[in-house]
Image (cartoon, rainbow, N blue to C red; front, top):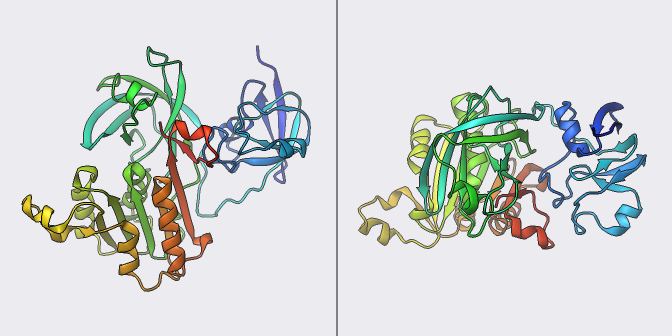
Length: 365
């Protein structure tokens, strides 16, 4: 049986019991003690803390996220570190008053819907064994079972449904060629009726409901999932008082999805504006197909944002999707006088990025 140690978190002064085969972050989140985190796999360095006392095993922390000299200085990544004695750590804890943190729990579920919604993208709906509490924008960690595709592993996907739907969770999953979790499981083995095992909620990319600023939301690919959860919660549940504008970027309509969903929300709620942007498909091509070209904006999503706004001073930004798009959108918003402290972001990386020097918030492959 695994040894159990006491982990004390300063400056909170709270103590948590942690098994020797359990990460410090996992023990804290399950005990309802929130620590900064994002990726939960040792790459993004968001959970970096100081060891004040005790011994730990650094586990699989990336050498880029936690360098050798930092280990020598007594740093650790709580998502990878496992105790080898009673431990005291010091964390930089900054929790917004308008964000309620929910403990991580284990769940089982059944796939009740699997639908292809765009090129290489499926919508999964999972019915859970019991209700889950989460914040709009958070994600879940799924157990990918051992198969001929490879050994058991974990993969994370964001929740696209609003927090008020506590028994069913919607996920948007894009195929990554050769991906263990996508090509090797979701697109190959998962069907309606398939059982799944998962845990959550995780993450700090959430809707800040206490604000009433104009929220500029930028989504690319399946980065739409957490943004959709935020928008539905903000509008349908009256959780956000300010205006909301969604810029959804895609190369063409084949990669765009949920257009009708967001257009209906825009028609129903005066505070919401929807701007689907096509970077490689022209208005003439859209018209030739019989679709209404006026439904879309054309060009890179960043160029559309820049053309729409002379200034974004006083707004809030929410960015999610591929790293290149998020970085470009960040620069665009900042050029329009939006301060970094008012921009919330989450990049989606895949498993192959772990070997590189990038700081990856989430593993999506």
